Structures are given as C-alpha cells and as structure tokens.
Image 1 (cartoon, rainbow, N blue to C red):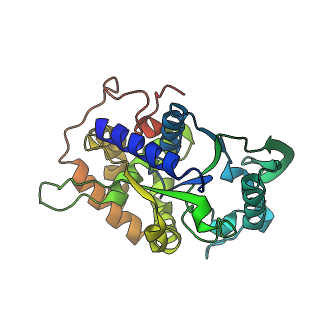
Image 2 (image 1 turned 120 degrees about the horizontal axis):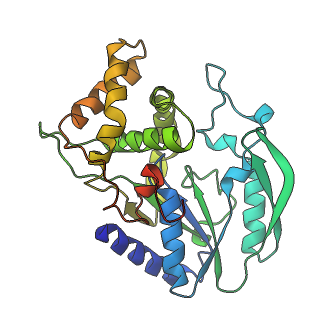
Length: 291
C-alpha cells in the first residue's frame, strides 16, 4: 500500500510539472486495473498541490443501444472504442481545452439510451480535464487532441509473484478475480457470466490497449501481493462447481482450471479490517470510504 501511495505522489508531481501544456489527463488501463480509485487518489494528491481535476465521464458518451456495435454472437460489444460516440467526445474535449463550456450528456445504462439531461463543464484557471476509460491510450479515442496536450497514464496489475511451481502469476488472472468479485457483489452479475465473457475482454485489450502502451507518459502498478488471499474464499467454490460440470467453453474452462490451481495454494483470508478504506482493493471487495 505504501509503494502504491508513493507512486501516486510521484505521478501527481509529474502531472503538475507538465500542466502548462498537458491539460487533459487520461487514466487508462484494462478491466479491473483500479482506474476509479487511482483517479480519486490522483485528484486528492493534485488538490494538495493546488491543482483541480474536472472529470469528463466517458460512460456518458456511450452510443444508444440501436447504434452499438455487436459481436459475432449478436451481443452488444461494450469492449471496443466504437461503443463510444467518439466524434462528440473529441468535440467536447477540444472545446474544454480551448476554455469553452460544453453540455456533457447523461447515459442511462438501464434503458441503454441518453436521457436528454446534460451537465455543464468548463475548465477554469488551475484546472485540468481528466477522463478515466479502458481505451484511453487508443489514438482514436482522443484523436483530435494533440499529443502534447495529453498526459497519459497506464495502469496494470504488474504482479511479480510466482506460484508454488515457480511460474509467474498472470496479471490477467488477478484482474479476472477482481472483476468476478465486483460483478457479483456490486453489479448483480454471476461469476459464470464474468468468466465466460472474459475472452471478449482479452480480445479487446490485445487490439485496443496493448499496441499503444508506448504512448503512456506514466505506468502505475496497481497489484498488491496480498490481495489473492481475499479472492480465494470468495471464488474458489464457484470454480470447483464450474469445472465439475465439464463446461464446453474451452477458453473459460482452461482459465478456470488455471485460476483454481493458483487459489488452492493461497492461504485464505476473510477479515477485511486490515485493508485501508482508500485501497484500490476496496474498489472490488467493497467497504471503501466512499461506499
């Protein structure tokens, strides 16, 4: 936790150093990399330095369902940049960086449409715009904004753990466990839904995130060596039951077996009291100070 906090402070110093030219801060990273918490912690750190962030909620720029891209099964594919109304987002970002106000839309995920309500945004002296989005590094997402006007942050669970067989613990498996726990407790999704959707997540990461890592101005590690202990009691029974069904989904079954094998070697923990309320892990385990 101290290592992460130190990195956030170093990040805030660097953002402040570049703030004369870079007025748009982009927090990017794959699913469950800790973007929400990091954005909040960065805002606090910059606030202590006299700089304020104005958030542009990219989720409100999703296209209406009838204009959403679909995958090969006909399901709506929210994992691609094209799910966002990129022309409107870029137009609003250009206006904000020019000091002009914009009317940011509001998207209702229950209906899959914009509500018609808007929020007025404008940058004042001592303020920076910030967006937190999966595909923030993709050049299509902020394509109209010159590179020197952007400060791009990439988050990843850069774990350096090895398992009992001396194999590296996969970063994507940590993020899968995080998302399974959060989806079930906070979003009403079953672990099966999360697991069987994960190959779409990985496909999108490889296409829309990994090719642009070299554009990042700062890479922040959001992995915590102790977090696996809390995921075992929350997910192990599901993985055992899932594999007992001899599932036909090869990708999901292979991933389930791999993660279950890892969890079986981890000493479980259920007491959340030792996890700080502002930890990235609270984003997935719950009980954070903003809960």
